[in-house]
Every structure is written in C-alpha cells, then in structure tokens.
Image 1 (cartoon, one colour):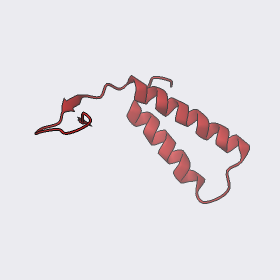
Image 2 (cartoon, one colour; image 1 turned 60 degrees about the vertical axis):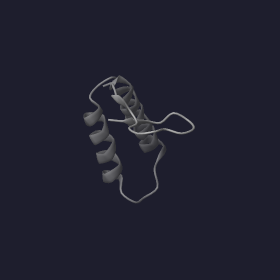
Image 3 (tube, one colour; image 1 turned 180 degrees about the vertical axis):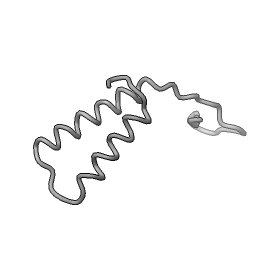
Image 4 (cartoon, one colour; image 1 turned 90 degrees about the horizontal axis):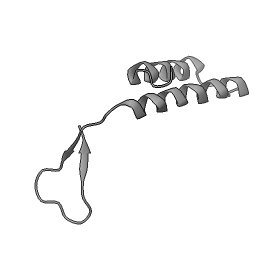
Length: 67
C-alpha cells in the first residue's frame, strides 16, 4: 500500500490500535504497527499540502499555516 490513500492508511492504523485495546504489545503486533505506520508515512508524503500565507503583519520568524 505504500503511497496509497492517506485516509485509508490512517483508518487502518487507527482500527489496528483500537482493536488492540489496553494490553501489552507483542513483538509481532509491534512489527505490524510499524508496518502500518510506514504505510501512513508513505501516504502522507504523497499528499500535497496547500500552504497559504499568514494574514496580517508577521513579526519575527515567518509564519505559515496548512490549509
């Protein structure tokens, strides 16, 4: 799924964590969690985020906000 839909990757990651519940993670579960995080990261990198300039005066460092 690398480079897939960010919404799909996010939903899969959230569902996996929700289904896991409040118990210790096994090594196999942590490996799957890492795989899902990698898919989410790949999908997030494929998403273009529109950057718009801050309105009004800006003092000090430049300020940008994600759309």
